[in-house]
Length: 277
Length: 277
Picture 1: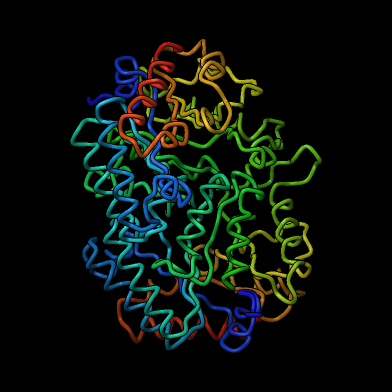
Picture 2: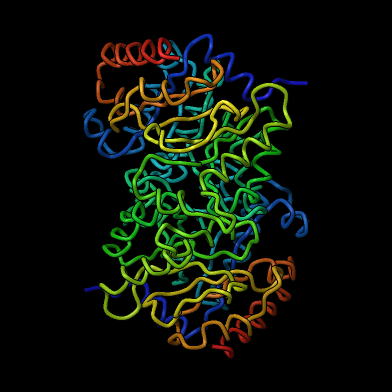
């Protein structure tokens, strides 16, 4: 039996640390790098980051929205990025936030987790507005293909709280319901499971026993968005080593386009994350 | 000043009726049509439907998940479909259910609503798990480009109810909060606004004055999913003519691959929708 995504991830994080380089080729970032806001600019930016990430970290997280801006050509660049990362043994998290009804989710699951898909990544982020139950095809394909899913649970952005902190008829908050559902799914696996949660770095207000999750956490919000690595470390201090992934995008890319400055930024954040967990 | 998406849509629906042909090239559907589950099968299926839709209806709704299964090549087929539809004057709704934090949503908005994007459609569906407030860039780009957005509000699938019917701290249900937010946004425009709601055909349990929305409704769930056109007509009977879009996918495609049978199915549903509203 192959290892689960959670087990593979935990090994890599214990070896190399939990920093994940976010690849967010927005118009604004390409402009800062003096690159045109075109598919050529996109390709330059993404490949420069991957090349450095291969040497410095365990994981990358391309933000799919910024590739999708360029349609099929943007997706071709994303395929190239995923394939270069895969060949070099980098773990990849496709930040796609996909989510629809169950039958449609099987299409998205094929795209991001399917064995023969050109877009296959080690994990994909998903959004449960249509219910955690609608995510079943993501979970089962992830389990079969030793890949992973990160489900949005409690995000950092203030607008998200209205939805995520709403109460179900049984009095539970939506974010707690999602975390609990993930935990239940993961308990089917030995060790760290295939389904993780996306929890914003500022969401230490939630009453949930993080250490009971049996799955990994993807914790955005550190760096340019204001939270600190120390804050994340405190929040998850009782979790097993190798459980927490800290994606940093702007905090690193704003050091660019100089490769040596980018490398320094990756090392600085990499050390900080490694020393804190 | 250009017409809003809502105004353009209302004119088309009044002229040609509210049937929207859903283009859902799932593995199962391609198999039913005796086509391979490949990008060639995808292209055959999608173009056959568009060709007939051009003659018979006002709108198509490609389900993006089923194109995404084939990565950049699937997106190239989607671009072709959108461009053929555009050239023939068909309205297009990209069923993408995109949704992320505000800055990322600007990337998705560029992809689907941007003036020069190869994926531009007349409207795109979005998912508000990160808050209605995070949708601002979709709304503003739609307004600027005379395009539209359909926000998921109350879906038909049973799993979605836990999230959508949860209560905010002020006691409002999430689905009602979303509908109210859309209405407030639309009140900025004269006539039918650019922002619509996705409301499942079985969701006549909601207490909301549909006729106050000032925006269109996209109402899935008719046909293979069990709801009837009459049910939808009753639900929205107080709304202005031209407000309601009824997407039907399986109900039509299961008549295929025979072109004459597909045409008959489009006409039958088209007449039924036209006669009911």
